[in-house]
Length: 138
Image 1 (spheres, rainbow, N blue to C red):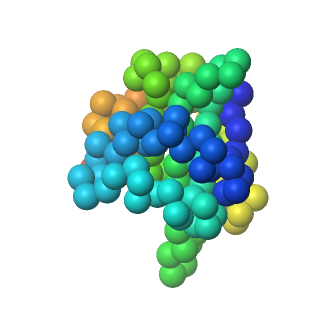
Image 2 (cartoon, rainbow, N blue to C red):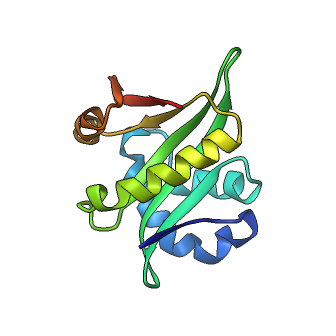
């Protein structure tokens, strides 16, 4: 299993496969649909990783850099797996890729909008549960 950062010019070629996973992960974003993210991904305003097992996309992570007045964050807006059950298997490779990306881009921390069930898992991994927004200081 490996994680791949999707270049903006390749987003369209995998969109039909990743859009349902993105939609699945948008449960906490009541006013958004997957297609809302296509153009920002193609402009590199949003970032997309895919977790691939052999040639199958098993998971997606979608996020963006947020510049606050005094700090900079990488916000993970979607983290969804095809099966819905292999979070523990994908967490180590996903979090390392996201941390490396965030640190390289000068972020102070990572934020993730998650379902309450996923928030409980993040708490066990030293994340803070803030009303379904979990944070990890870099």
